[in-house]
Image 1 (cartoon, rainbow, N blue to C red):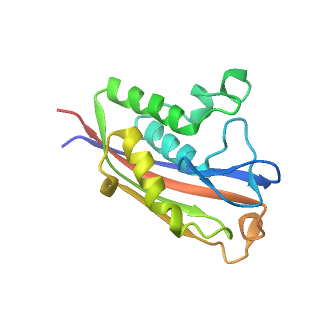
Image 2: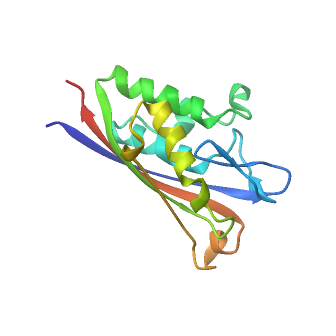
Image 3: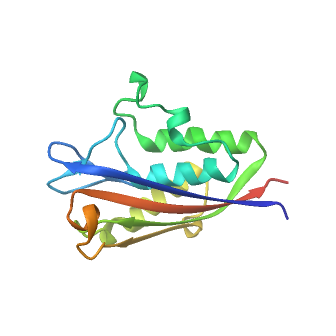
Length: 160
């Protein structure tokens, strides 16, 4: 079996007057993530893992922050475009495993919806999309609630 593994990471600063969007879900919180698009760190980490598995660079190459067409972009739509790239090259996703690191808010109530949204975009069963949430135990910029980060690993399988 021909397989590839990619890993991804993203971090964005927390600010007021921005929505908090993770895994395509708008989560009620007093702060949101700052970025050129919707700043969805989870979806960005997954996209980078997908691209990395095939040595295709990172999301900044395909959706540069200097390009105004990506301002405020829905990261799930960008994820669909990355998904098309890997399919065009003859690959499919085996599974995704990810973790979001945030002190607040509690993410557990939103994980099932995040999994469902990501699985839907990627044409996967939700059981193929792992999402975990943890804190940084008040250490570093994430622990001090200055930002939120996410890590992702993606297994790609050569399509038959």
